[in-house]
Each structure stands twice: as structure tokens, then as C-alpha cells.
Figure 1 (spheres, helix red, strand yellow):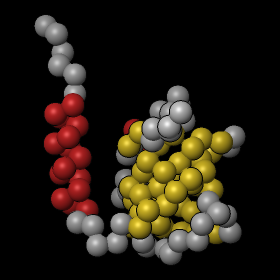
Figure 2 (cartoon, rainbow, N blue to C red):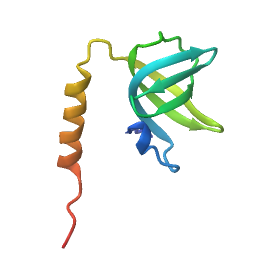
Figure 3 (cartoon, rainbow, N blue to C red):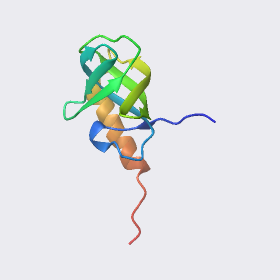
Length: 101
């Protein structure tokens, strides 16, 4: 069965999430650990891939005991981050379930 990674902002990660994708800048890299920042929050992610600090990336993560593990790291260098955020907001509004009144 294919895995579906739920797009999340760091502040939106839920306890029940098992597969997520996060967009942010690599703030620091230490051994098998990277710290990803979205400007508001930070997340420590275990990773066997090497990645440069300050690089804009999307990380596809799976929950492991004690945190998150990077399954795939996608380089987003050259992405217009502000345009990406606006598109995310438009998509989110378009897919929200209407509240029945």
C-alpha cells in the first residue's frame, strides 16, 4: 500500500501523525540529525542523507520512537517560498470542509 505523507507546518504536527512532509530551512546538521526551521518552529529529524545548512528543503518524514526520521529530502533551492506559502493557503481554503449551520 502506498504511503501518504501529510503536508504539515511544524506547529500543525499532531500526535497521531505517522507520515508528514515539512518545508523549511536546514538550521543545523549534526551527525545523523538535522534541525529544520520554518521561521516559527523547529524540528529535530534523524537523517542518513547529507544536507547543507541553510538549504531550503521538503522533508518526507516517518515517526519513529523518539522523534522523526527523514525518508526523503527534496532540495527546493530556487523555490519562491512566499509564492509557495500563498499557494498552500489557497489550497487549504479550497479543500476545507464547509461548516454546516
